[in-house]
Amino acid sequence: MEEEQSMSFWDHLEALRWSLMRVAIVMVILLVGLFSYMPLIFDKFILAPTTSNFFLYRWLSGLGELGPFFPNFGNDNFAVDIININVASQFLTHITTSFWFAFILSFPYLIYELWKFIKPALYKNEEKYIGFAFLFGTAMFYIGCTLGYSLVFPFTFRFLTEYQLSEAITNQISLSSYMGNFMMMILVMGIVVELPLLLWILSGLGVVNKAFLKKFRRHAVVVLLILAAIITPSGDPFTLMTVFLPLFMLYEFGIMLARK
Image 1 (cartoon, one colour):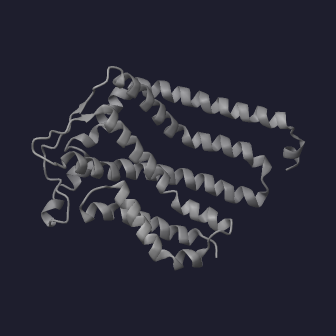
Image 2 (image 1 turned 90 degrees about the vertical axis):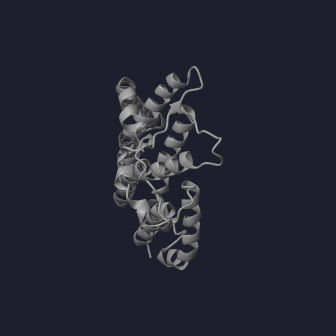
Image 3 (image 1 turned 120 degrees about the vertical axis):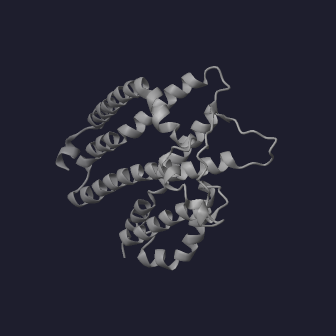
């Protein structure tokens, strides 16, 4: 704290400027590397859910035989062609996707620089809790992004592309539409799984506590079901439960973290 008090406003501004510059340098390095390998990343990673070879589809290929309430992933001929209807779309997608991937990969370093900047202003007991919040929040963000890519987006994408209002209508998915849904689903899940951290912070501020969260558990179940239905607009209960159950477990984990 003494070092913090001895620093002027301009010293703080200079420290912040150098932190932002280091983050920008890391971002540029990642951006250049990702831009170079983006065609390979597209083929092996981003476009993987568009074919029946995707690991989740192969893993759940026999699920449809269990009953009508389960989605059918046994179609080995599933494939969706992504088309481009804009002259500059492929080039712009190349740049924007490289940028977002660079941001996601550099996120831990961004949090580290932010932690270094605010740490001198904290007391010892505050360092413990703020450090935990940064570390836990970063880990949960990556867990959420992983769930979004491996579970939520494939379920939603396959349901929507196989849904047929009329046999006379052929689905042709544009590149911008695919990438918009792909990035949205992954980032939304990365944010949604921060629920335990949010409950922990609110309990630390005295807004909620364990008793409050337990009392309104039934209301939370309804809200989480609605949220799961919004994230995955699939009609089968299995897909809904695959999203709802992790959200409910996160709520229960938040109760464990909340203060009495």
